[in-house]
Image (cartoon, rainbow, N blue to C red; front, side, top):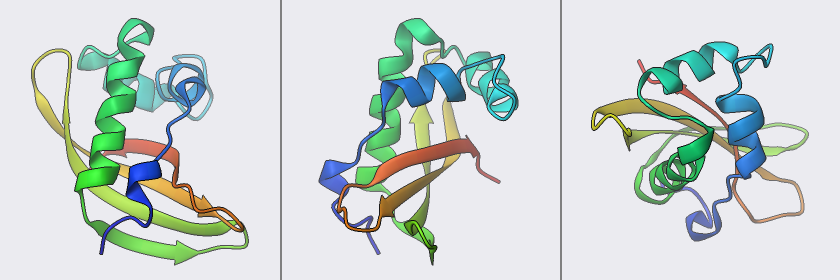
Length: 111
């Protein structure tokens, strides 16, 4: 199964800079250490956005789950890092009720 409306996948830049790469965010901090260890930072956050969108557009859905807010989708994929290393990450997307745009929720190392 593919992510519905994958061509419309959206990653707000603030979600990257203020959460996924934020070393001071209570929940995002461990993720920031992980992604920063591979060379991602606020200067190249756009590259991370594009890599996450590529996963949404090219990877199959591993799992989906309905919630009161919409449907969440789990996709695993390879992400090219600024250090030139390919890493395997799990991404979570949501298509909220009454919308059709997949919005990025989070990413972390895939197992």
